[in-house]
Image (cartoon, rainbow, N blue to C red; front, side):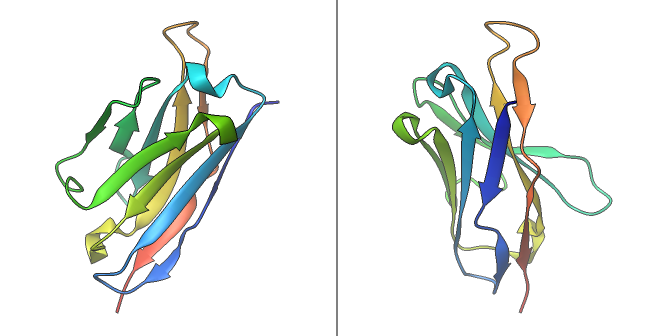
Length: 119
């Protein structure tokens, strides 16, 4: 059974930093594009950052310059380094693995990790 397990969430003050991790099991990780999404209460899930199999990255405008997405294929893991956190970054953060370029059903989600930015 494929699993994506996120960790690293927590409570942090505005201006602080957190590093989220996502570790995948039972997939050929290097074949997957990875992404981080977030969902705040009462809002739709939104894309935060994306990294391709070739480590090309892109970011939503709201986090550009503050967040960095990375991956380590040897560890089957993706990361989201978050700096200069703002209260509006408060959300549940989800990891996504996508290989629908190989097959339409190859898309998986983690269970989410809560990030709360509050003074």
